[in-house]
View 1 (cartoon, rainbow, N blue to C red):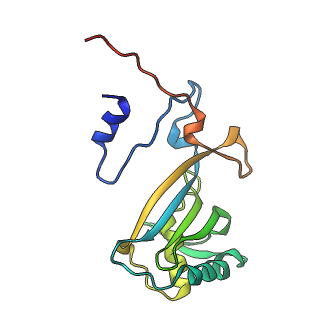
View 2 (view 1 turned 45 degrees about the horizontal axis):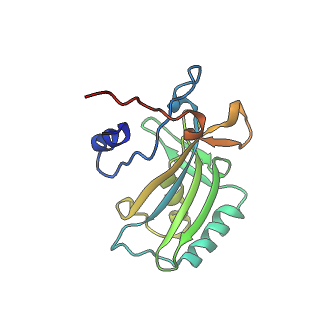
View 3 (view 1 turned 90 degrees about the vertical axis):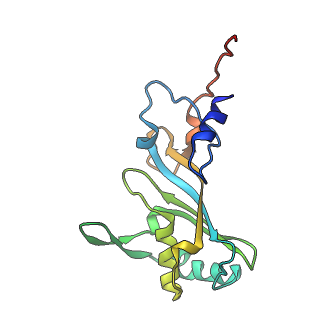
Length: 173
């Protein structure tokens, strides 16, 4: 079987390998160059959203898009600190149907500022006066990015675009 099939067989339930590449020899490790990721979040089957997609769009616009800041209290094992998520969230959109809204988030991810999409969504729920139940939300990472050649702007490239396809020669049996 192909390497992709072999990898997929070894993954935990719910984890799917969609591609892999060989990074250039002088590249840093993949995890050290991760700078951003796109996520899609939605309500699990049987869990009904508190608002329609249109109402969630209004809340995202009011509390995030048009707001000067989006400050949350980030708790760690040792401390709590105020963090403005606005500069660390590159996109926050409502998608899906009116009855089943979904949230698209593009966030800073990696070793510098690692923002979890559920942190952003739970903060929105709190600002909207809605209880956030993590067990009612599914999270799907859509894409992972690195900064383009050390670019310090918001220029990102997908990790899969940084390497070359790995081809294995078929062995004789």
